Length: 225
Image 1 (cartoon, helix red, strand yellow):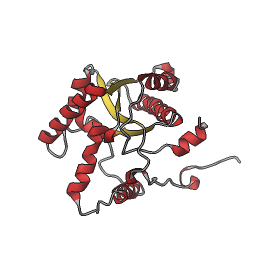
Image 2 (cartoon, one colour):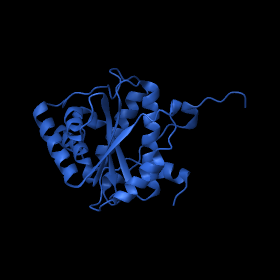
Image 3 (cartoon, helix red, strand yellow):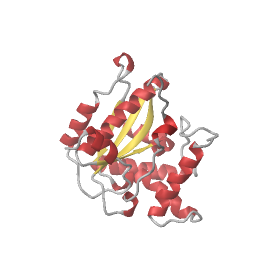
Image 4 (cartoon, one colour):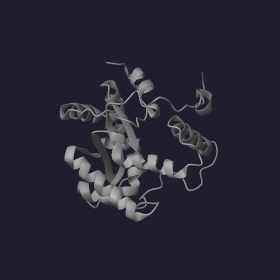
């Protein structure tokens, strides 16, 4: 198995998966270990629905039908995925990663219909056999959302360690009503995101590029050294 460092460096958002099942025992092992994520006061403010097989096919079909009838904004979102005004340098980073993604599969900037079709593949989990759907109580705020993120990151790294790939997808926030209804989420719980889980298709061109990261000096300040 790879080290933690190797898992961190090897992880990427997989957007094409092999038609290969993932055993329930493997998913259970990942989640059993991921639950050791830290949280203030040990609140453990997370829930995850694991969906596969016919249940996943049913969820995908219902979400796609809902989005098809709901217009370009889908069902709206309960939280802003991005700030309403994205300043630099963050706006450029978002633009650049989008250009890299579409360029990898030969979709030019001006072909908006093709870009929308590719984006819609979020709701088919890019062909992954397992969907993980993470939710959090509505009463919780930014501190607990950060703790949920730590749990999600544990899941991704543990999957990487086992030769699996993941893609965390806030796109599911635009289908929160239908997804929540199908999953049976209680009214006081909010869907945060979905995640595709499976074995990556390493030969697919969309998996052949990596987003860049800012150098250390761009985000870290050292004092007292």
